[in-house]
View (cartoon, rainbow, N blue to C red):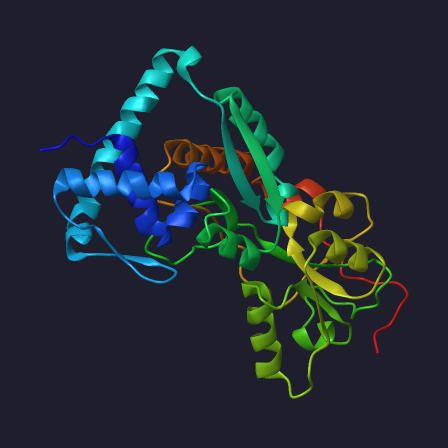
Length: 325
């Protein structure tokens, strides 16, 4: 038997994952002919044809399908050995880039803590950060343009691993200027006298809010969806409407009196986040970064976990000036 090597198996897995010699070459930072040569060498060594070449894509043959799980196991063992070698000698560790995508809520909460821990634990890993909406982050993750995404998950794809993160409770908040009924808890009908500021149309919080309001009221609700959390906060501060925002993100504005909590009979579900990454091909640095993110997020949640009313005093429901429509 002609010998084959780990590099050929890695190339085989990438071609199988992307369905393209060109995309595999881009990921490996090499040329398409080099990828073709590695696959041809592996096929010669195994005495089997692994791919069916088509016009723009390639597909695994029956022999390729049988090889796939074995190749994945071999590479996982090789990666564990590489991590062991790196831990034994820091000088053997090579610089890598972690392409990290995060939702804006994470930026306003525990992302700085995570970046500090990542730098302390993996000083040779460089981080490229993308901040965007969950739908965009999910698409970029599926296209392998991101290594790790912290988003409103989980991502329900067979090739994606999801690590559950602590949730973020949502609270109704508004400017103290808005005039609401003088009672401890207001109704949804009370809220609908003002525009409702929400997450973007493509998000789970918007869908839940829209279904709730349209299901209970004949009148079409005035919902202002925003792709930017900062924009939602700005509109709320300016008295444009009432917003459903993460409690942790707005606590400083509530403490300073610029915003106040509105107690309502109903509020949207907590935001559920996951640290999601592709398991094919596996990447030990990404796996470790995802676990570290979960650890940092849980530590942050434990540190800031006491109820808002105990930290900031009682929520105010008595308004002062501006009326709704």
